[in-house]
Amino acid sequence: DGGITQSPKYLFRKEGQNVTLSCEQNLNHDAMYWYRQDPGQGLRLIYYSQIVNDFQKGDIAEGYSVSREKKESFPLTVTSAQKNPTAFYLCASQGGRTGANVLTFGAGSRLTVL
Amino acid sequence: AQRVTQPEKLLSVFKGAPVELKCNYSYSGSPELFWYVQYSRQRLQLLLRHISRESIKGFTADLNKGETSFHLKKPFAQEEDSAMYYCALLYNQGGKLIFGQGTELSVKP
Figure (spheres, each protein chain N blue to C red):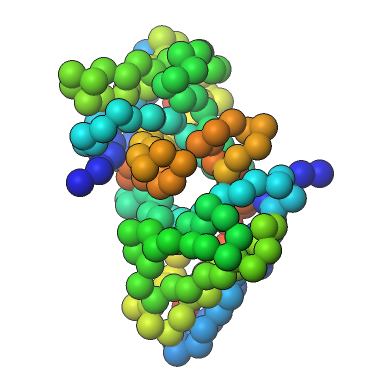
């Protein structure tokens, strides 16, 4: 079953801790994205990667870090420097049969900072 | 700067009524625009894109470059259309896709 898998679905973190959200895809897509979804603000781009071993900052990259060591994987680390990390995080990939420039989304991860 | 604006947070209509979800964009280049939809408990997914010029689930959207708009329309709303709708703009071809704030559509019986 092809698609994008995000884990964990729910995550709780204490202030001052880093946390890593996993995103894996088996669609053979080249590009991958991380968005943050907040009520009333839509989706805001955190980081994106168009190819392995390369990634670019989005509009709200501060306090986040990513890596792209494998085509299938694009993990997002929410660091303690992120001032308001409680949010719903969406991973997406792009390419292949879905059509150029069309994103396929994961189910999301909800992070709550206690 | 590139921007997508959806002025309505919530749009509530009765079943069978026409629906128009507004989307305005600012972009100096040639835009590629999309509508994505998120039904309750489902993933965000593509509804339609302007270059396809197609109707999906009865929805259509026309790109109006003069008014920089890409409004989503449906002549007769159905209860199953209730969802969150996001307008999105692609710029930097093959790169960044930016989204509007989203409009929640509620179709009442």
